[in-house]
Amino acid sequence: MSRSTRKLPRAFVRTAAVIALSTGVAVPVVVTAPAAHAAVSSVTTTVDGKLAVGLPSNAIWVKASVLASTQPDAAVLLEDEQLADDGSNTWTSREALKLPDGTAFGNYPVRVDYRLPGGTLQQQTIGTFAYLKRAKVATVAFDRTSTDLNNPVTVLSGTATTFDPSTGTTGPARQGMPVQVRVKVDREWPTKPVTLEYRPEVDAQGKFSVNVAPEGRITGGEAYLETGVTDTVAHPAAALPSVWAEKTKVRIQADSDKRRVHKGQAFTVKGRVEKLTNEGWKPYADAPVLSSLSAPWYWDSYAKTPLGTGKSAADGSFSYTAKATFSGELYTYVRPSAHVPSDAADTGAIAVPEKITLGSPAYSIDAFGTVTASARVYGADCSGESVAFQYSPDGRTWYNMTGVTAGHYTTNECRVSLQTEGYVRGYYRFFHIESDRFVAASAAPKFLSRYLTRFVGHKYSTTRPKINGSMTVSGTVQRQVNGKWIAHPGAKVMVLVKPKGQDQWYWSVKGKTNSKGVYSLKAPVYSDGTWAAVTEPMNGYFYSETKDTYIDAR
Image (cartoon, rainbow, N blue to C red):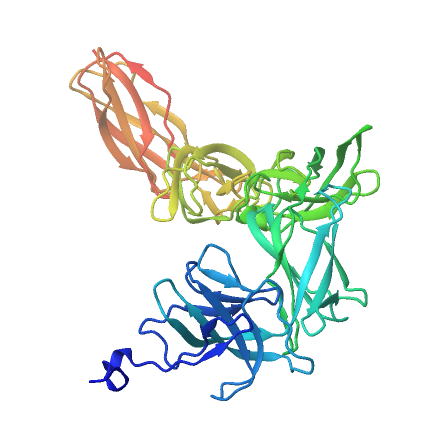
């Protein structure tokens, strides 16, 4: 078989054309099919309008062609064989590409011709070249390196430019083009990072500026253009510099006009605040002062909801109304910020008594004048709280008789109970005097009374009775009604005897008075002893007794 008619394997069939260069060297320029594993990984456009081809750095020859369209016979708008390798498998044009005059801005397909060591000429059509104007924030800076109490605002200014690849020139960005600014700030009260956003516009000279009140330390951020048109693309954001926040020492003195208030009751906080300057301590005007139940170095619910706030006057003085809902330490301070430290506060206390009720009262007075009383204290934990027991002769004017300590707090209540010597008649009640813990509270009062009784004309029929004999014990029992002593009919009388040499009393005889309050009882006598008569307990009457009488039996 002749060489001209020999058939080659299908995998090796290629069609190539050569052109004679001016030097007379033949170079293959067209390959109809790509290699089995295409070497070009990407085609992109850099931010400055250059063409970048992802291709192994060891390529022997590279050419990029920008095509007018994706059609097979599309015209070549530009060819570039001067791509430079960056050593990281990327070949980039040396300058921003300029397409022929009159070419519309847009995205154009790219064809890459290349040859790798030991390989043949290959061709790939991949990616696009973005032939667009390129706008960017060229410069950006703050007007100060730190903020302080007297200069809390810093000005961010910058310039914006647009590169036009059709002319190869750079000028001011279009007037009115928005600049998206994001300023990152670390704040200390509360401690958290925040991002402040601004949107200034570019002026006719391509400049922009915005006032930034960070209230913290600026840690960075970014600024980029929003082009808003299809023929212009924005560069990546420009980084913002950091701005430190300087602190100023302050000192404060404060006092409240009340130490104890009811829930929601207003009280006044007054004081003075100063700041440390190069000339020493000076009044701090317009200082944001607040009072809370939490120290400024804590950020909790109490600090988030201050009891009251105000601003200092030119001389540093302040006065404002505050309200508290429960007790605690009262902290008054300048609101901490990036420029005011959180270590200066004046401390006091405010008491807001909790509500309690005294219920289920029970009162009684016995024949000996002992008052027994009990009640329950409902509400907050009242363990160990002191409760007074009071007496009133008329139900209007009350006198403290004694006090009692509330028992343990169980099942939402504390119990109080006592016994004390009472009065003939009058009102009794439990009463809690207002304290820092609890408001004043009163149990329902109760009127208690008994009739006073007494023995009149008590006597013995003989002072020398016979042993195993008897004697008559007689007299009258009276009761007091409306200040007058009258007969006490039906009174129970008991005659008692304490035999000689013993300490124990024994009853000898019992009886009742007649309609005139008179009693006459026959008592047996067994030995020498001490004798007396007493009234037995009766509802509504106090106990009474006679004097002791020693009788020598014979």
